[in-house]
Length: 146
Image (cartoon, rainbow, N blue to C red; front, side, top):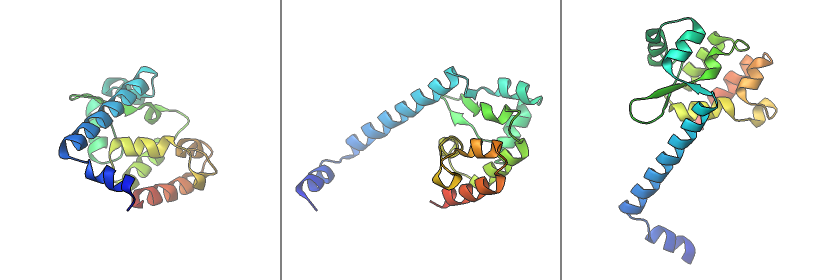
């Protein structure tokens, strides 16, 4: 181990770790709120209206792992607006969410929105719009196991 690595490891304390985690959580929350500001994340009521369902149906879909939410601080949950996108098949989105199992909402968001080499540098959402459901399912399995 180099002196730099030793010094870094030596300086880690529970206090510095807590500070890092707090800062990381704050950055994540800021990112989530920014996504809400531009309409990429929506509240329960807005998503329910877009889908023509009740808020209770949204909560049940999350419990059943067919949908997911992101924590926006406190008890506020926000949902990806893409669940209400007419260009995507909801049953396909739900199947992929179930495949991603119990990964945190932020991880699922990252999966759906980040370009993947296995999808020709397209995001899973873009690949789904092009009819590549099986490819996206394979990418979800690999993502879950990574």
